[in-house]
Length: 84
Image 1 (tube, rainbow, N blue to C red):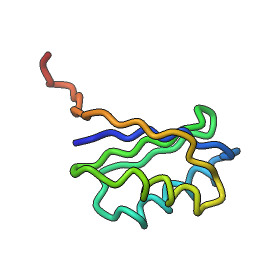
Image 2 (spheres, rainbow, N blue to C red):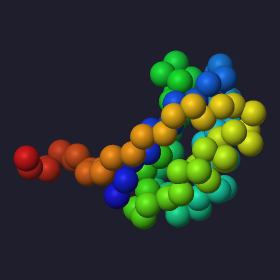
Image 3 (cartoon, rainbow, N blue to C red):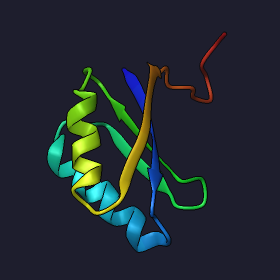
Image 4 (cartoon, rainbow, N blue to C red):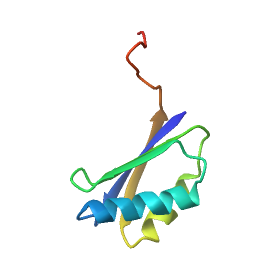
């Protein structure tokens, strides 16, 4: 799995977060999780398969907010019983 962190400019409230989340879910129906924070100015997407970062940026930009930067890294679920 891969975690994408998008720096998003323009989100001001919870409704803004929901708008961005819904747009990403529509663009990528198979993603595992999407979560936005207007306070952190970011959206985090977790996907099983790699996704097109340009398409991800376009999905955010179509909402009226600006996707400024996208970073990706391998994601490993950390649960109560996981070992390291």
